[in-house]
Image 1 (cartoon, rainbow over the protein chains, first blue to last red):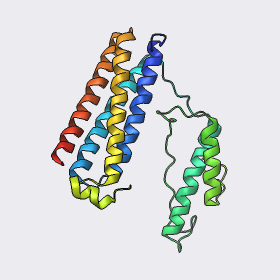
Image 2 (image 1 turned 180 degrees about the vertical axis):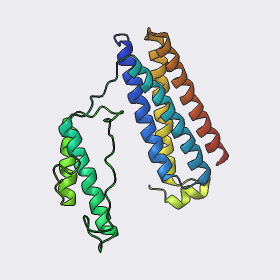
Image 3 (image 1 turned 30 degrees about the vertical axis):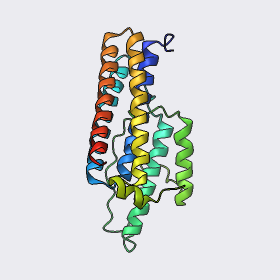
Image 4 (image 1 turned 60 degrees about the vertical axis):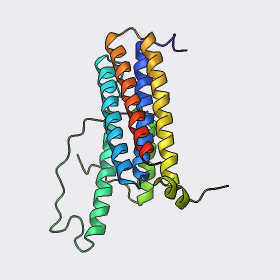
Length: 146
Length: 74
């Protein structure tokens, strides 16, 4: 059945399979009421994630798995969403001390190297950012992180 | 007929939701084992072959652990 698969195909399929199994254990753990069952599921989930990491590292070493680094536009949109959400939750937590007023101090800009995991195509995250922005009713402040 | 969650819990200490999800887990483990075995036979890279073998063994271990746990609860 897999005779036509290259080693790269196999590695990628192996990784996708581990992700799928990991997802099952993730949900199972969250649904487990029995403490012993929960502990077992957590342990197995962790084991699968470690296994997946080994496959992931191998695929990367071979140059088979190279998720594209986020372009500046994507990074900017990403930072704006994070900043917007942070500001919003800060406002909810401290309604008296508005952002920009005394007592509020912005955190230093993080150095973001782009996602290390995932197959997500560039179009996906941009749409998601837009939806998140709309959902929270906050348009990102341009240049806030520049 | 739907079995009430409490009845399932009474029988083996697991809720119906737990049994559904754990069943999903062992099926997923089984699928992973089958794939890993097949991959091990066709891949050329020895390191990848070793990885396939490790994956297979890990999922076998998981099924064993779940099986032991379920056995204690019946």
